Length: 320
Image (cartoon, rainbow, N blue to C red; front, top):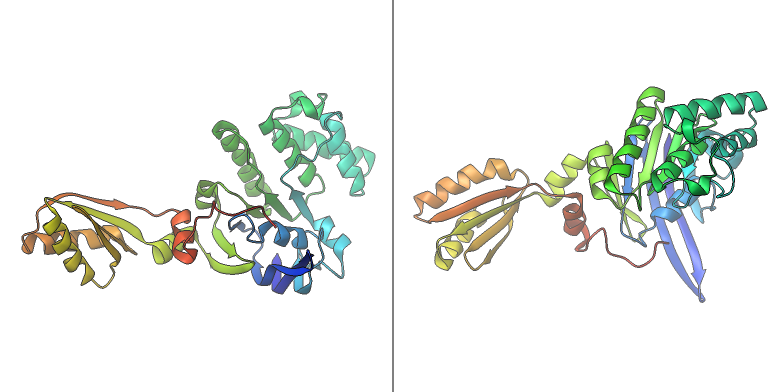
């Protein structure tokens, strides 16, 4: 559904060349839900703008929904839906009218547009708001309206650029309930960016991480967390001497890494911390180390990015 090779985008800023995207290779299969992550300034939004024909690449190739984004931008747009970070509906236009108008822009007849609008408003629980002005809706209602606008022409591929930013937890959960139901019913491929790492972790089947315009990771969330970050294992001992001895013993275990000591606490990372801990505790007991507490903490996607780059996904200055 998405295939890019060597995709780049350079900008000229104050006489200097800024390489926003550098040699991006992406493969997304039909029906996948893929999260595209990175800190602000990593090149996420620039990449999305190229894939949705809003910005021409400097070099490289991109095929989206079977269409070359440069040779056939109109064909690309006919096959995709796009939810940007802002609201798509005009504040002073009625909800149903906005969906109908979008359908007409895509070449649907007036009757087809009205029928499709009514279908989507029903599916997205917006039927009772059809006559309201878009500007009077709540944040969650407006985002559902944006989805209706993006899906009116039955696209094969839906781009979501931070779809739930600014919504409270209840509205976020409600929005995702509708997105996942539409995907299940219609087999839509979804390519999304988000700053809510729990969304990427629980919703996406695959996670791509971009930094400084380059792809630095691409795998299912569980593999990324296990292989790149690893579980955190923490052991609290009776005194500092025992903590030091526990670090020596842990350091000899093949899967243990990043072994550190802080006062009476020894910490490490391991791909499968729950499997390592029983062996570690047996070894510590055999060595006479007095263990007070032991804990295994599952990693997060932010831990993955810290392991890859040494900084948080939430860091950065202004997206490119």
